[in-house]
Length: 527
Image: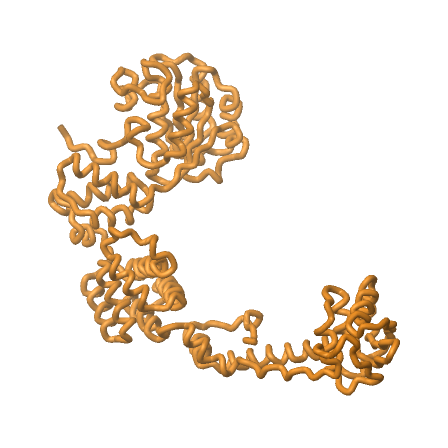
């Protein structure tokens, strides 16, 4: 008997053996068990996630001789013919090669005839998004009101190209990409059943390369078995896939932690001698940095059985979390720049040297080192002729000695909102036994909206423990108001902070080496 590839030999025959897609299996199982059958189903998802497989299992569930069931027997003639691709009432159509309207019309004309062998005539249209607009229009009416004996199962990798009029007539299921752990477990089960020697790291490599596609994983497994002469081992799988051994990546980061640029370049030379992909190396380095960041922020998320757990935790303790973020960015940018580099080796080496150049033991140390340049002098304490600790009856001054008096009074008043804003934009002109005269610039007259003046007058009366009449005159201020003083000091602090950032050596190096720029709006003075 000729050899059958693993992807075909191990195609699931029922819902119980289907790996992943539990949300789809649950919905279809309930619908079949309760006989709540829709006339059109749409399965979407990337390649190799089970769209056609689920369609065939559904066809068996609808046509099994034991009745409509979520658990087809698999032994009746209908089930066996569907598994063998010989069931006359299961029509699988490749829309990529049958895109024209005439072909669709011919297909639908046969839908009116009763099924020959089964209970339902099932149309499985794969890559349905490839149909022309005319073909879609031709199938709309039949898709909306098909004969009782017809079921449509549509499958596509690109649902965005399907007209809304078609989508609205279908029960839609989005199939997810397979998790790497699920792929690894399924591959191990197959190899045990096939009695093929294997190791777990090799299967993890295949699962990662499959990128969520079980079919791709099984195809790679077939290739790995042939490459390894009947064995699936990590070293042979790495050589087959051209992937980079994790030891190289750990060696790069350990040399980086030690500040040893020569050791980093030695790793690059070794990778070049083995003809490994530098783009793949940077991709794997970014993945490793992600795992390190997870170990820093959520160490409990690192599995105790993770073979590289100790090395991950050691690097997580060595580098600052901020630097791991920077290193991740450098790795991604370096990978994107490889096509523009003189050659891939040069681009990879420059990325490693960039990591070496920006390897502060902690970015927080750099920030701390720059603080003496950015920190502004503390504001001078305000002196007040009306101390808060004075007796209940405060001293009244006919003319304030200094502007800070009004600052101190405002600070002691229990004001908020518009009333406090009004007080801060006023200049104190006179404060005597029965009246407080303030001056407000004409441009700020809108601050006199009620009840702000009344609240300010009441707060002043309470503060001085006697009735005070508040009067506000509109005129240009002669001296700075508290709001103007605060605004000027705030602007001075901002300018000093921007100047300190511009002088900082770390920032200048980043601008020159990475073609970076400073976002001035993000600079905040340290108070």
